[in-house]
Length: 321
Image (cartoon, rainbow, N blue to C red; front, side, top):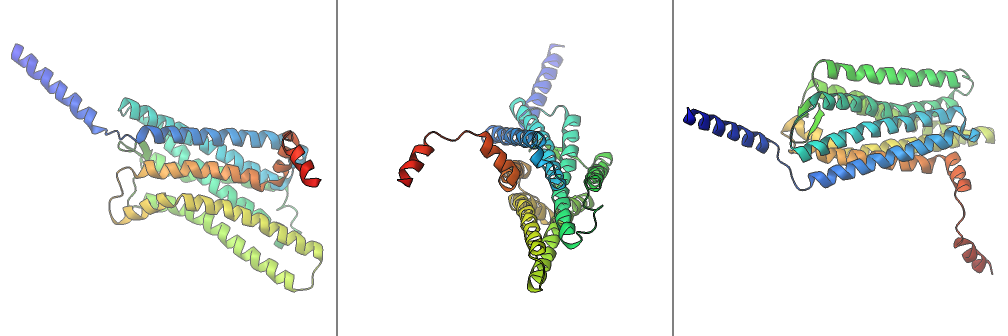
């Protein structure tokens, strides 16, 4: 009897040891998790400040700003999802366990939804700029009501897009990366996500920017009203800014796309998701900072709110004398 108890005890100890060694924790996991939490938190704070300033100042109330609010709000929601994902990873790295997988899968589903919303919000902005230049007489297309309908349609489309991934069980838990995602491999779900989430919105923005640039070049050659040409050039610059934001996401998302392409041929690196999501979190923060820089109304309001430095004024007086 004693021998049987000892043998059972040894078996249980071996099982515990095996389970504990299933999750390997590297030294760089915890610092990276903390960096991801900090970057997503900063993005959320900056995004909420941006929205608060815009809502409380009438100068920011315009149809074009509605689309910027949509992009900013989407980035805040996406950052909240990424923050929860980073906290989940940090907790499980510290505990070395695999609990609460259902929450992890839900967060991954929301990540696909909000990431898609972000990309298509930039596409909506580019479409609006194109219509305002090429079809300026289509008043309804440029109205606030129509843009709100498009935004609601965008949100519905993004939710419907991600539902099959959740309902068919394509989102699974990756124990090495402590994250839930679609496995990177040559598969129908991976191609489906890549085309709808990345390819269509980004190619659409590039196509609109190229077509609008050709249109502005064409009307600049012809004899046209200066006001019309100025308006077209201004809208082209705004589309160029949207193209810059989308390009930033593409550039900082290159590690993820490289891992996707590698997975089509062979097995990607063990910690590919951890590496890819570092760049994803940094890209969202970069986009939020660039949104401040590109939105002239917000820049002017911030200049009025922030007090002038007492040090700069004497220096200006010295320079003048």
